[in-house]
Each structure stands twice: as C-alpha cells, then as structure tokens.
Image 1 (tube, rainbow, N blue to C red):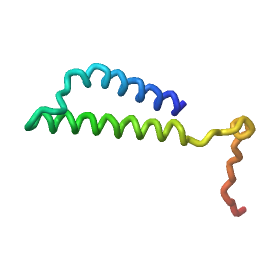
Image 2: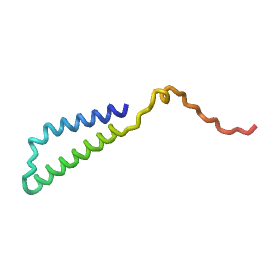
Image 3: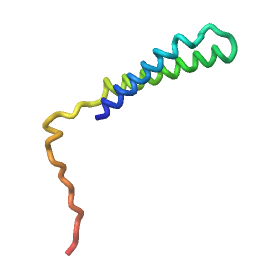
Image 4: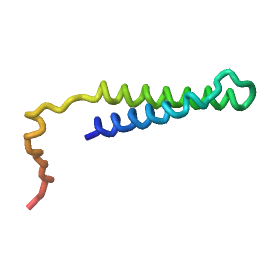
Length: 78
C-alpha cells in the first residue's frame, strides 16, 4: 500500500519536472536563478526520498501476513 504512494509521488514529481525544467532559467542572475536552483534542488530531494523509501521498504512475507495477531491479555486478579 505504501509503495503505491511512493510511486505516485515519484510520478507526480516527474510530471512537474517535465513542465518546469524548460521554463526555469538556471543561468539567470538574481532571485530568478536562485529560485530555479532551489526548486530543482528540492525536487531532487523529493525524488531521492521517495526512491529510497520505495527501494528499501522491508517486504512482509506471505506467512507473516496470514498469521493472526495474538493479543496478550492483561493480568486480572480474582
């Protein structure tokens, strides 16, 4: 379930980059250049974070999914 969310975030970030990169002027001076570099830097951080979460999420085995959870009963004194 979580992997679907990570994949969706990656696709949305790629979609935004597809439209933004041609419009950003990295070589511009002043605030425009700083904004472009900051925006691209943050987009790369988002991609790296989602890729890391997608690739390194531990897998749950089929046996572990099917085992019912056992609730420990609290101690009761009669």
